[in-house]
Length: 93
Image 1: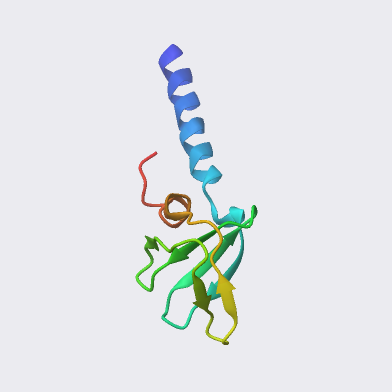
Image 2 (image 1 turned 135 degrees about the vertical axis):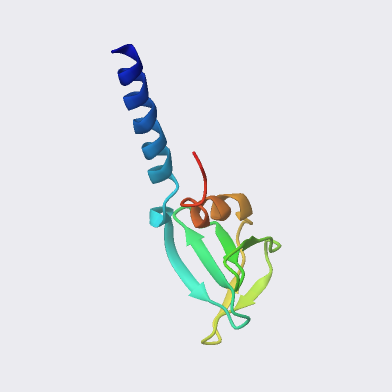
């Protein structure tokens, strides 16, 4: 009985941790000229996804150009945070 309860509790924790790192934290995404995408989080900080779907480092203050010609100034450098969002389905926790 105790083992079944422990397994049920563990599976609930695992499923809740997967939900915590979903895309709902991203409020806006912009396609860039080079094929990358800049994602803006709720707190205004940003992370960049390269054309291959990986989070990459971009210096804060760097000016990025969107496909429509709009210039976006990088705020923050949320590489790890974006990596967690992009790879939530690949992680085993």
